[in-house]
Image 1: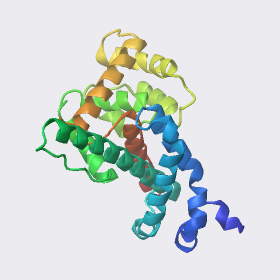
Image 2 (image 1 turned 180 degrees about the horizontal axis):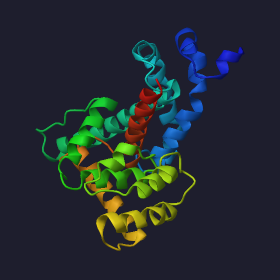
Image 3 (image 1 turned 60 degrees about the horizontal axis):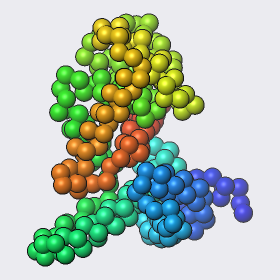
Length: 255
């Protein structure tokens, strides 16, 4: 195997899609395991789900190569595509079950299947949902990013509805402006709590702030999915969306 086959490159994607697909196997397995852990797929069907993801991804590789703009890392771009495929498979399974049940119970009504998640559209949907919380949306956004371990950006803090002291902003960016996946949830919100106390002028405990962030995420997921649910968002899909948004911003800043 040539050296360039050992890494994600656009050249490999275009010239040897089969080899490129082999490189994708660890990402596919991780994504499927994550969605199984969230209850989207039964663990007993792991091999079937992975095979289905591989088949669908292989068909899409040519189109993905054509549409790749270079705004994000190719590996990130493919990661999002794989997660989109997982979501599509999940939605198809849910829609099939719902349609069968509805036909059995009512006989007349059918559910239109939704298309695969599009990152741009779903990011817009997320920020539209946040508009429903006009006085708190930026604070909620910060809490959501902390809960999902997405690095904070300077403008995330600057948009907080109440002023954040320069020293506090510096602390937040030094701790949370980079990868902090090794921190436990307790450590994250314990570090964040003193800033919250000063800015919000209350002494809510770190555990209570964590619960507040979790409750807001659950509310946002429900609103994004619709009523009746038309999408299959979860904390993990929000994490993917926010991670993609962060990657785009950093790549744009570095370009």
